[in-house]
Each structure stands twice: as structure tokens, then as C-alpha cells.
Length: 281
Image (spheres, rainbow, N blue to C red):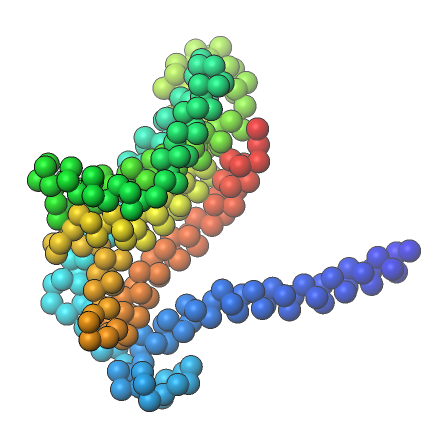
């Protein structure tokens, strides 16, 4: 019987690794082709149909950062994403904790959570015109603050929902013990709840950064030139004369790399946060 189980486990291992390699190929090949295309000379886009170019060039990256505009757009994306992540995590963490520890009836709390989920998933195209008119009335068009405000409307409901599900798994007994020892509300929240919620905060930070960094529709609605972010800029390479493939691929590589590094840096917290926040009740 043990030999049968051993052979079965060996067969599963033999079949498992080719499947994993196949999945990795389909996941990583587009990024590999993106990087290769970004260093392909312009003359080879139509002549050379091979995956690997005959020669390499960094002219497309130089074109992206030609002058000061490339750095300005990169700075806009970093400022917007950093500010959105910071505000969303602070507000969403406190709101999620308040909902879990509130004395409201469970039906009221669930109604609030449903409203937050609805806000997160309604069609964004339906609010483009109203937000444009509001920002125009506030004289915030083509400013990074207009982009930040719009992104916060998408990220804060998501963070509140995620942290709510995470805080439901934090034992109330820990706070009760600290309360008996004389710890006040803020002391319990800072010394006990926040350290336990670091995996959830890291997970929320990653997802919030992804949402803000890649957002195109709302950002394009309230920006013109000085407040453009990288996703808005990359759409400008699609012109009436055709697609400018080289700079577009270079810009796409620059958009992807920061998020990959950010996710790799927090990946262990991402897995722990998803497991603890979504599974525990």
C-alpha cells in the first residue's frame, strides 16, 4: 500500500512541474517580449519578426525621458500613488477597525460593507463627467490633487472592506486583557491591533498601489499636460499615423517594473494578509 502511495506521489510530482513551467511561461512571456521589444531598434519592428532582435538600443528609453517631461510624469505617478496609498491605509484601517468593534447591529454593519463594495465596483465611466465638472468648479483640473481625490474614491472603500475582513480575525480577548491592565483605546490600537494587522496593511498597500498606479480612465479625464500620470502618457503613443511601438514599450516596461519590485518586497505579507483577512471569521 505504501509503495502504491509512493508511486502516486511521484506521478503527481512528475505531472505537476511541467504544468507549473507551462503556466509560468504564459505568465512571464508577455513581460519578456515587452522588455525585448523596448530595446529593439525602430527599423526592425516591421523587418524582423523573430522574438529576439538582431541588435539592441536604448534610444527608446532616451526618447521617453527626453527633456523634463518624462521625469515630470514619473514624479506625478509616484506622488499620486504614494499619497493615495498613505491616505487610504490610514483612513481604511481606522474605519475597518471601527466597523468591527462598533456597537451597531450586524445588519447595519453589513449594509455599510455592501455600500462600500458597490462603490468600488460600479462602472467608472458613469462618473467621469460629474467628476470633471466638480474639479472644474473647484479649479483643480490638471493638478495632481484632482487625480489623488478621484483615486481615493476607488481605493478607500476597498481598503475598508479588506481591513474589516482582516480585523474580524483579531481576537477581542487580547484587547480586553490590555484594557484590564489599564490601556486606553489608542494604546490598545497602536500597541496591539496595529502590529497584528501588519500583514493586512501590507496586502491593502499592494492592491491600493496597483489600483492607483494603473488607473487610466479617471486620470485622463482631469489631466491635460502638467499632471499626467504614466498610464495617461502611454496612451499618447497611439496616434493617427500609427502606434509608436518603441517608446510605448519602453514606457510600459517602466510602468511594470516598480509594481513588480513593490510586490516582491511585500509578497510574504501579501500571502499572510490574504489568508488571515479572507479566511478567518
